[in-house]
Image (tube, rainbow, N blue to C red; front, side):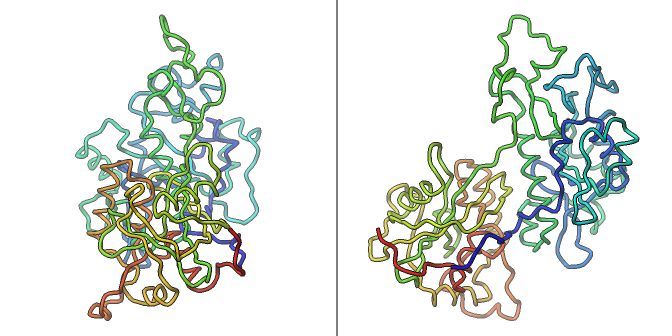
Length: 454
């Protein structure tokens, strides 16, 4: 078997130094916002602001300066806000619940993504080197990146367009930035740098936008740590909690106060000869589209347990010799795809009537898979198919169990091959980890060297 430890899938391999120890410093964050080098990634209810790619015919994230987005940021200070607009947090109010606090009504959460450093060696300094604003600005070596979702603003679309237009980001110009479907960038074959920033930004903005109230007591949440922590408003030093029980989040560590990543196992079963793999067609998949099987991990199970359970529940197939391949962040909205392959007996019947998620599951030979991979439309989905899959996922959160979004990256066929006969089935592109697993097996990069015992 080939070592897969160095495998870097799309959306992974972040180029940013996240300097997580500085997220609690409002001095550092405010200085980073004011840096002339800082760039912003904007979303509108999860839709990224994109612009024509200057080096290709596709699209790219629109990177805006702080000057361009300043009308959307509210009043200063942006972090470490006091009791009223324009006021800074007083020393008497400093506590673990107010670190880099951003709480004023109408102030959308701002997410600090990290710093892109110009050299390979990290030059980020300890938090003690950011004791005042001037020193903080001087000590920032690199380009800071931030993100925000404008859907969190109390602003109508018309007003938003006017504000963006006033800063030079006019959407009336055909070459100007525009809000796009979040899967459009996948179809645009984005570069690894953009993909990694997009994944972090979209997942973090979605988390902030979707968790406005404290799960423990129902009070409104506010943003802290540069968008990396949510704090219950009842814990503000000036909060009036008369007649209320203390919020449970006042003490201890609570996972719902920090960003979540939902682990999803995704796997292919390889038969004992090594020449066949099991692929499935979800009931929501368009056309003759087959992929690796997948599902969310459940509490109280290991990664291997989840692989075994999902293979049995979806296809009635028992697997063993579960092997890890690689992982892929999947920002739709915040999944972590964990790729595996395992051994199975292809002579045993396949059944899809257990959890009824699959329309079909079948074994394909290496020759059959390679024939599809070599076909110009072997991993092609139309924009219409992608929109259909995305709409189904958005209206039915329960179906987000990878089943739809994992397949929404597409490869564009060569125009000269438009008239060629269609492939016998279609598989995911190499941009998705399902496509990587299938291709690595088809090319002989993964497999089992000998028959494994039950």
